[in-house]
Amino acid sequence: MRKSLAIAASAAALLALGLTGCSSAASGTAAAGKDVTCPNGKIKFGILPYEDPSRLEPAYKTLAKALEKKLDCPVEVVITEDYAAEVLAMENGKLDVAEFGPLGFVFASERAKAVPLVSFGDSEGKPTTYTAGIWVKKDSPVKTLDDLKGHTLALGSPGSTSGDAFPMSALKDAGIDKEVRSDYAGGHPEALLALVNGTVDAAEINSQTLESAKSEGKFDESKFRQVWKSNPIPNDPITVRSDAPQEFQDAVKKAFLELDPKDVAEVGKFLDVDPAGPMIEVTKETYQPLFDLAKTMGLTEKDV
Image (cartoon, one colour):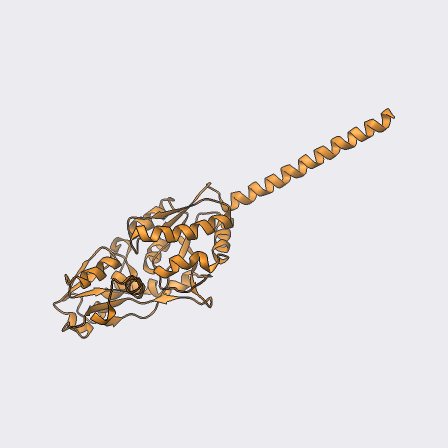
């Protein structure tokens, strides 16, 4: 009887040890998994201030919350002061993930070694684009790009793809860049407002800002004319630091690609992606036209 009890007790002890071992192993696996998706205890997600930050923040927080669930890691949305600040923040390790404008990505790739992961797809899962444009009031004597000579033009911010580089490239190609009095308004909405208020003769207004302003009743398109429009520009890439562990880079890309379109919808509206579709994979080659533009115009990060 005592022998049986001893065997039973030994078996129970072994079983307990086995269960403890399994529990530790499971716990270790979970911890290891979290180390992959959350190596620093928090992911800092940088956003360029292409719209009013007070409007951007709620939209990106919705996206960040969905990302948190996928990665089991807190995601902090960081809206930087300007385009240059975002590049520097990633270069200095202050951001783990960041959305850059297409031209901003050129400098982020070269200076901060940012790696593109995904961009915004349409409802059919196809890549989305937008266009730069120059607008004037309907009764303006300016009918073509050449007519801008001697007139004032509101640009967005230094280093902006559609608010600076593309319109200035168009003026340079037309040979009138020295004859147009251009100045930075401080952003896309500010450039549009300068035209609406009549403080300038013309303004850069990209297709994204145009749609947002129209939907909010801030721009009556019937009272204005577009005198120049760019070729399609690939939408913003979301990037990751190249010095982040490869497992983390892969996990972040997977998480973005698996997001439900409804989690992206609020951000998509700012980027003229409505209805929003799934995020789509992009590579450096997707943005080669922007690298070519920067080279042609002799642009460097100093121009940002």
